[in-house]
Image (cartoon, rainbow, N blue to C red; front, side):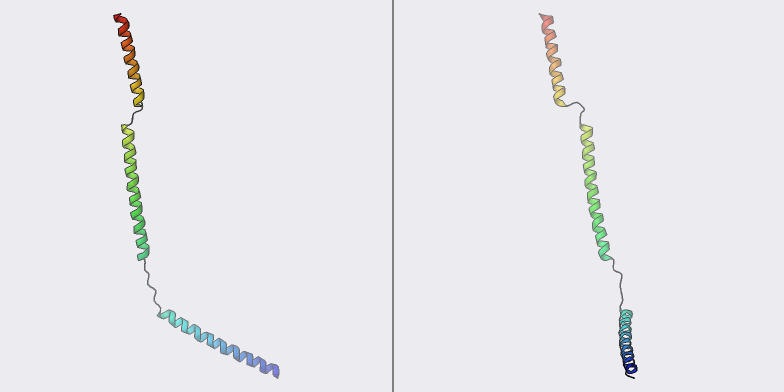
Length: 104
């Protein structure tokens, strides 16, 4: 009989703890039903707006750099200035040498 009493006592304890757990879960369920969750996306919207502003600023800076590069390319020469001056100097020296030889 002792074993039967022990088993019945364990069963009663288990039922009691089960009842406590069920009560606790019911309380949690009530709290969850009363809880409201609002979808708030203002922080995400602010981050996206800030990112878009940064992208626009970066894009405008790149556009200015591109315009400056195109402007410099259009105004650049394929022959450097020092080479033009050297060629002009050589041409004039040869011209003077020919004139000098012809007049002599």
